[in-house]
Every structure is written in structure tokens, then in C-alpha cells.
Image (cartoon, rainbow, N blue to C red; front, side, top):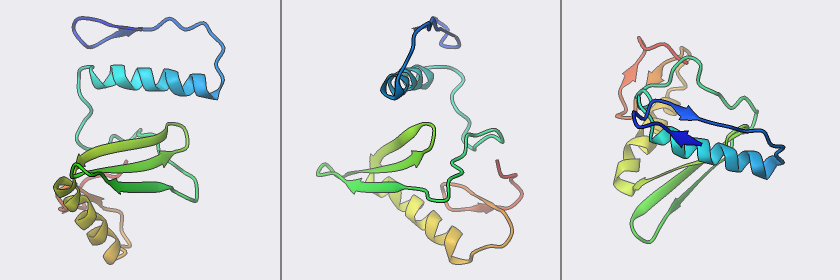
Length: 124
């Protein structure tokens, strides 16, 4: 797999048979390439975002000795997705979840990472 100089295109040649671990490795490589590509992902999720539709969503959280935290969420197709950031940067996420779930708002609403509720923003 090769990323062109502009960072906008990847050339992929795949003519192989993969087991589950091989597919996971291929997805990991594609993910690393996508992280280096332009344009960057939008700051709000688009309408066609892959969505975990199982009845049980799994997640995990850990605070490391260096003061960073790691948050994982399990996606049925992508596997475990992790985000590592300073614990102080995770506080808005905790507040956002508390705010979004405390009222059990009956109408759909998009909550931004800074905690502001934006009901005018369409949900994906």
C-alpha cells in the first residue's frame, strides 16, 4: 500500500485470502494510512458513519501511570478502537456523558465534545 505525495490517494493491491487476524491487520494498516491522508476527518460525524448496532456495547477505560488515560469502545466490524489522551482532556467527555444521560432527553440531540447541546445539528 502506497500513499501518494499529496496525501489524498492510496494505491492498494490485494489479491490474497485472509483469516480474521489477517483482515484485522489489513484494517490496521488502512487505518494508519487514513490517519495520514487529506482531508482530515470532519469534527462531527457524517450521516453515513458506521454504527455499532448490537444490543450490548462494550467499552473500557484505564488511567496509565504517566497521567494519560485510554478509552476503548468495541465496534462490531472494526474491533477495539482506542483513544489516548491526558486525563484532564477526558473530563469534558465524562461531563458530556453525564449531561446527555441525566435528562434522558426524549428528542434526539447532538452533544458536542465541549458539552454544548446542539439540537439543530442532525444526528448521523
